[in-house]
Length: 92
Image (tube, rainbow, N blue to C red; front, side, top):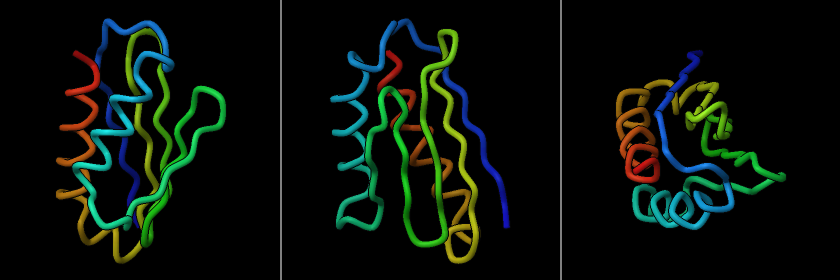
């Protein structure tokens, strides 16, 4: 098992502004429906084979936190790279 935290500074002030860009970025980075997500207020909840995660806006930073079990834990570098790239794109 493995935990993953990704933090990206942003000038965006609300998840309302971030939500459509984040949705589109994740669809592009994870085609095929392996990654699922839903919104609860301003918190995105993600899940996939062996993974659960959240992305939220906290004090000027997008913060992603994930808990990875096999098979996701075996792909941690790939998952981290893809999620980081999407979050950085959204933060601009």
